[in-house]
Structure formats: structure tokens, C-alpha cells
Image (tube, rainbow, N blue to C red; front, side):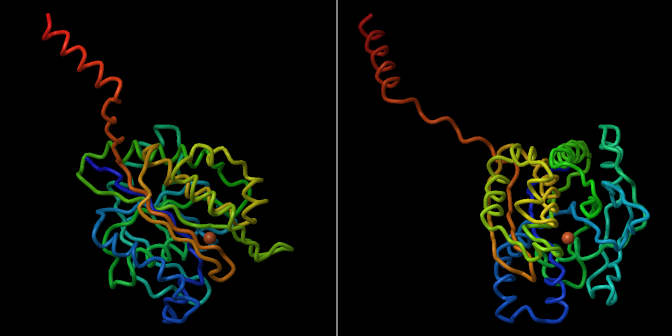
Length: 306
Ligand SMILES: [Fe+2]
């Protein structure tokens, strides 16, 4: 049986990709950002997932304004890097997992989520930057990746609750896939940022840190947050954070936070990252308190006397 073993969230700032491609990762400005992912890369190398499901958004690379699917699931065998205006990024072609992707499509659609099935798609920085952050810059990505693109570019994006519920549908799909696979799910984008208008450059660290806390401890409350609150508190592009809720919905209610990293800025964006371990069993019940021990001792005494 396939199982989701962990969820990872990460910003997908395009300038991070440019820093990698232009070999600037050791420059002090960028070292601050990349050093926060060193532990994560080690964790990923040790964890060796069989498949990654990556929730991200397309930035008018694969889909123009002529066609804007709310949820688009990549079912193809491979996804080449998109040309985002200066040629495709020099990163490996993303290999998909058509069998699991088709299973997710079938399961989720029959479950009430009308996903768009995509059999040909190029992927932009929204997907490739988080892969770099978690896997480094290998010649080939070490495992298949299933892309799931969410519309957060054209109003109206899906609600946080809808994203959270989609995560639950993905979880049911993965749980019912017969092959024994270790799956890690990514939620990408965010954190607070706004790239245009009078509030361009907005960063709200207080909001971001509370959002990170909520991801671990109270995701159901985050799922209820309306769009306007993202816009007001996290800036216009902060709405990307709804994609993190797809990832969180696919995990158990109770998770273990393995790692967190937050830094500002990268380009004009707050960078947030978290690793949540799934399948954490509830702690065993504490041994009975003193009064109970006393009671059972008293019972024993009484039995002896009888
Ligand atoms: Fe983005």
C-alpha cells in the first residue's frame, strides 16, 4: 500500500532558482537562504521517497489566461522545464508517475473533486525551485514527481477549505493505491509577499510565523481563513499559501514538526519552510496517578486479608 510519510512546505521564489542557475548560492545574501535548507536536503537524502506529489502554481508558463484550471493534475510521463522568458532553467526533466497520478485522478474525481487531467505540461519555477531546495542540483531528480497545479493567479482561487479537503481526497487516493510506495507531498508558494501596487514589498513576519504554527497545530483553523485575510495580512501573492493547505489536508490531524526555517527577504518575499512527519502515533497513556496506585494497593491488601 502507498502511504504519505511526510509533508513539506516551501516558498518557490523565482530568484532562488536564478541564484542556483547563476552559481550565486555562496554569496552572503543567498547563503542565508540556502543554509536553511541544508538539514532538509540531508533529511530528504535519508528518507528517499519513492514519489513526490508537488502542489504548486503555474505562473502563466503552461497555462495562459485563455485556460485557467483550478486544480490541474499532471498525469504525463514527463514534464520539461518551461521557458519563463530567458530559456528553460537548466534543471532535469521532471519524470512523472502516470500510474499513481491516474489513480489519484480517478479516486479524487469520483470523490467529488473535478480535477483537470493534464497529459502534456511544462513546469516552471513554482515546481522546480522547491525540487532544488529539497534535492539540490542533481543530474536527474531522484524520484518521480506528480505535479498538481492550483490556480492562485486569476481570481477566484479555491478557498483554503477546498484546498484542505482536496488534500484529504489525495490522502484517500494514495492510501488506496496497491503498490508499496513512500510518498512525500509538497505544498509550495508563499509566504507573505506582494509584487505590485502600493503595498509592493509587503512582508508580515508575525502572520507568517503564526501560519507556520497553525500548519503544525491547528490546520483546521487555517483552512477557515477567508481570501481577504490572506490579501490583507500576507499581501496579494500571499494567497499562494492556500496551496500549503492541500499538503496539510493530506496528513493526519496530529503530526510531528521535524524542522522549520524562516528568513526574510529572498528577492521581495518571505521564505518559509516546514517538514511535518505523518503517521505519528498518539503518545501512550501515562501510568495511573498516585491515588489509583494507592487504591489498587489497598485492593490487594483487602484481597490478601480475605
Ligand atoms: Fe509563485
